[in-house]
Image 1 (cartoon, one colour):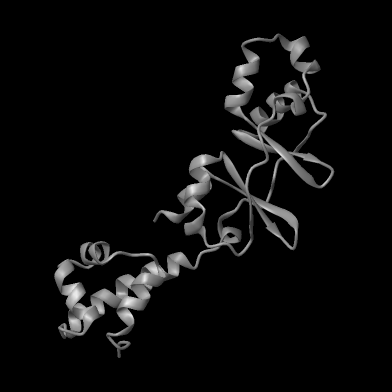
Image 2 (cartoon, one colour; image 1 turned 120 degrees about the horizontal axis):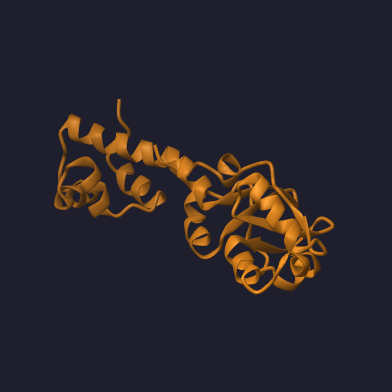
Length: 184
């Protein structure tokens, strides 16, 4: 038994889908979706089932939260650590960015791009002298553990990483590679 046809529009809007995209995903014309939503058309059972299956599938994806995909083990550095410390730790862990902490407070992020800029202009002795606080980028965005992942896409585009907090404590990190977990 399927839900009432009137719920299609609400479900589609809830997950941020256009009529055109729903039509594309179901193999039904955009005009047909419009007519079904406005009550001007009664689709066959098979067509209605196909529409609801797509909506249910996408809704389950949209219910995925930041806490579900974040990496729980966060490699950290302190603002007073050296550039050489950052290089060594990032190489050991094969990671491309790392949050910088001052106690429990996130104060910045160090990235491969940021390091490369300074490696070219320094030797190993100088890299031991340069403090991360002198070269780190601004603090990455912090989102709540229950933030829907679909809202993170734009943050990941503009930031190298996003930190995840739960009850005001940083509990995870999301990088662009973590968002690949959403692709089947």
